[in-house]
Image 1 (spheres, rainbow, N blue to C red):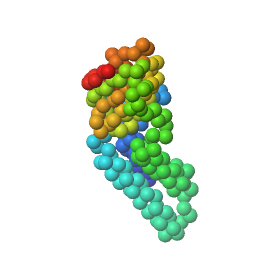
Image 2 (image 1 turned 90 degrees about the vertical axis):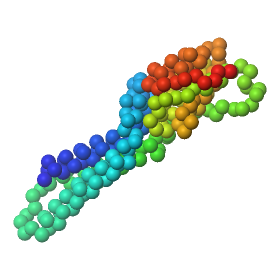
Image 3 (image 1 turned 45 degrees about the vertical axis):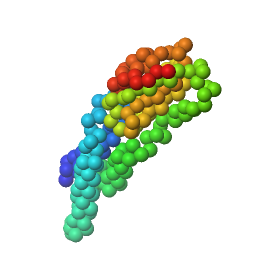
Image 4 (image 1 turned 60 degrees about the vertical axis):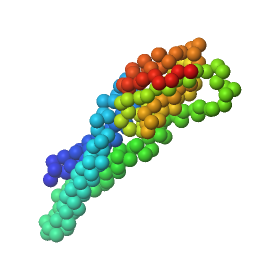
Length: 201
């Protein structure tokens, strides 16, 4: 019983982590400086619904075992054996909540990123800046946009970066005296994506 319960919550936790790994990796890359981490797990994204379903099934089975054991103990005339914390409902509840938080990560991950500044269309601010637009390959989910924008905003000379997951492109405003489009493109490649410069003016 102990081994079965332990295997259940470990499997459930791993499945929950895998379900959001493609969105957790960009955050690790931003804060941990792990170049290319975001693209290592892009292949998981299409399977996310199935992994979430598997996680739910695993925890449903774990809770069934937990509750069935409690009912069996109540029906048994013998004195129930003392159960460790790792086999308790409290521990299973904690693991279930943590797994739920991992699955829901894509919905609140934006809290960990700084919002990129908006690029104004005002013609007056365009005289000293250059704009470059890149088509981007390799984004697995919408959180990859924050990875790209967060990285580019760390470059000297880049004043704004807006990446669109839907359009698979990045628009960058920069000071041509301090940086050029080739350096920006190289930085995007460095973190694991495939940029193609489409416009530079």
